[in-house]
Image (cartoon, rainbow, N blue to C red):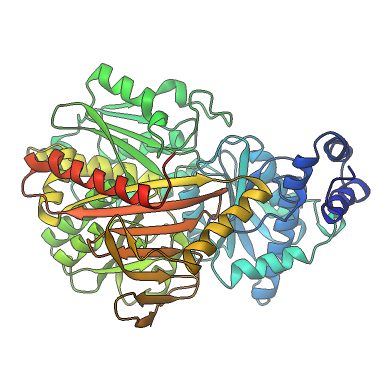
Length: 580
């Protein structure tokens, strides 16, 4: 115990003397005596809102997800809502939760604290997808909303995504202001935990129908679906919330041959059939692909625990299943949407799409081809939602996406939506089939027209307090001594989003970046490569994004050009000393 930092020890001891329950007292005392390193990680900081809100490992401590950190966050948000909406007759919030351990418990605590503060609560009576929560906020006229989820994080995690009245996750100044209100709360005594049942209304299946009917309005190819309604689809929710709505949504669109992976359709926060419930991880789709092979399916789709991300697998030219990455799925959806809008004479010059700065530039190329504006925003769908809000009534949002498997079509949801994305991926497949093509062949056609883009992501994990310091040093080193060339190609431009400056490394000229500040660096090389570096806002890791491009003369040249781009990425990774 004597080896502990006195400040951290004091923070832990506060949880022994304050108004905490006996079980919490016991756990904290046990950690102080037997696990000093765990005490450091649990108490060295407070959980903060990152790109995804509040997220952390469940357990006791100020840096953990538990009754008290959830309660304090909710009390702070309740105080802030009262300040911002003083004339509102009845402030309202919506609350949803996913399949994770303790999610219903944390959702009820959140509902109790809000209602105890005189705020009316719409609480989903069972687990529901994150995008439905975003939709509910706007549809029900709420001022805020919460979804209890840690998205695709490991089973030890849970989280608390906070939303504003437009259905978007919190952005400045609201995120920092809520944190400031939370930090004013020094004791659980200041949290109103005793809920008011009269101010809590349960919602469920009736609201699902409203949400699904709105998604159905996105359909652009009903005739093609009717012709290919027997398209054989395998779907897995990976034990999450998607199992409640994805199959129903696909049926509403007109698909009749849907096969659900039964073993993974059971909600379970321990995710017993996968190492990670993340559709970005190939292993997460293993069971679905095996089932697809067995029954001769055309398409495989998977959603993460809160059903805001989607991973897909398609058959290649040799009829073998391959996984598509997030950029490829975004390219397919964007190409499909813009082509259909163009065919239907819906493009008037006021339409736009949005992508994040680390997402493939092929989306901009496609938008340019259809003379549709393309916005670049920081990582996170809250920034896509901000563009929609700023353009409300002036321009028309078609769709948006990010490389991390999140997409959104239409503006009635203001966060990534895997429910609608599953339906539109299936619809795009049916549309391609009506032209005698598979989804993979459609992707190759896109590459022939716009160039073969190849992307890769490497995440360097550094856990705990020491890990945070190491990640900070890596970013500091890149800023203080940036590379002049990478993989024998000159660095021609460096964009520092923390300083909001873009610097031409040839001329030395600088230009402002018109986005909110963020701890991101981008290096643009003479050969067209793009390298982006950013610490994760929700996990203990630093991410390196690589993007390279070459012309693809014909689809039969794919393997040759793909190999060339793979070698280029390997060279970049080697130069940056990121090899294992």
